[in-house]
Amino acid sequence: MKRAEGRWDMLDDLAALGPFFAVSSHLPGTGPGPPWRPIRELTEPDGPLAGRIDAVRAALAGRAGRPAAQIEPRVAASVTHLGLAARLIAPAVAAAASGHPLGMRPGDVWWQNILGGPVPLSVPVPLPSARASDPPAAQDLLDETITPLTAQISRLVTVSPRVLWGNVASAVNAAATQVAARRPDLSRPAWTMAATLFASPQLSRERQPPGPGFRRASCCLIYKTAVGRPQGVCGDCVLR
Image (cartoon, rainbow, N blue to C red; front, side, top):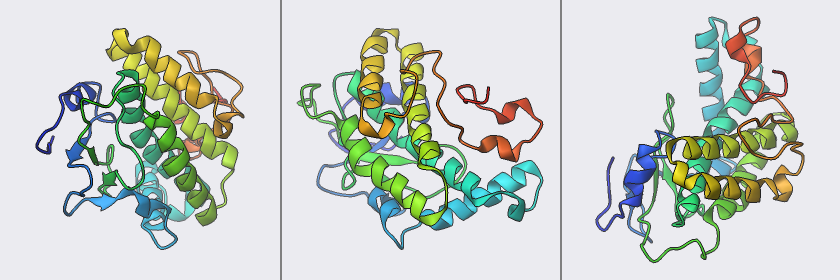
């Protein structure tokens, strides 16, 4: 994993949690060079989000052995949204649980628009001076990046906001679950951060609090690409 000079070892701790938590880094106030792109482009009207939804639709069709026309656009939009939300939320939750939040504002985060696995992310080098008493970066991410990303998905494709915000809740819970499993010493702060995010207005429709037995109040719709197959229903799905 590429590192900027002056990196802090917390990035190694994040990578040890799994690929959805691993991030590269760049110096604060700068941006990495190509192929890195600013994450804020995902919320721009002429940004790459529509093309990414189309690419995900084609990939889902290929996986299901069906023509792309048979995959509903709202299914592809939801899966695209869930993948991006989970990728952004995981390192933010883990870093906050460690007491050393990352800079996750739209102008700070860079990404690479590739399919297949978690998208590469680059964040400003986390400074040892950052502490849990600083503004919670995970909440900043929810307000400043996830919310406009969700709104942009809704503008591009007709898909229920309840589905999309259920995706976010699922991503938050999954991140806390993974942190608690891999780092039991961070279990309590991880679940505390998850509960804090669940208390936000955006996630107020969830009927259950975060935890190992969490079931979201909606479905991400992925089951529609795998009709009749049990693996088409996610572990935290309301339909399970």
